[in-house]
Length: 138
Image 1 (cartoon, one colour):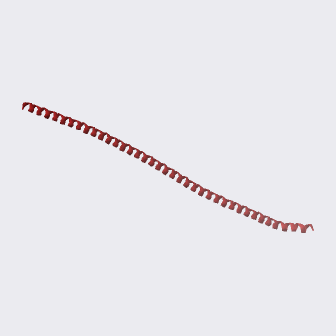
Image 2: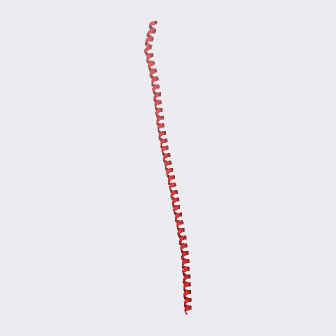
Image 3: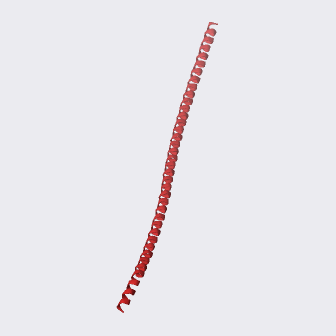
């Protein structure tokens, strides 16, 4: 009986030892699985962070390109407005020059008419004097 008891005790200890080894092995496997999951989770988090970083970079580039487009649009509008204003000023200046030329032409025409009338008047004044002179010679 002692022997049987000792054998049972040894078997029990061996079984317990095997169970403990199995639990230790299972714990190691679980620990490895948890470490793998943690590592995978960290990789996924890094990937997500990198993706967010890239998305933010693309958004900043897009925003920068939008700013550049807006700046270019504003510059083009300024050029267009300036061109319209210059064209209007040129048109006004050309019209003023035409008006001044028309007034100068009118002034020359009036001066010519005045000269003609003055010559006519002078001829009319000299005509009686010439006629008087011609009568006196006869």
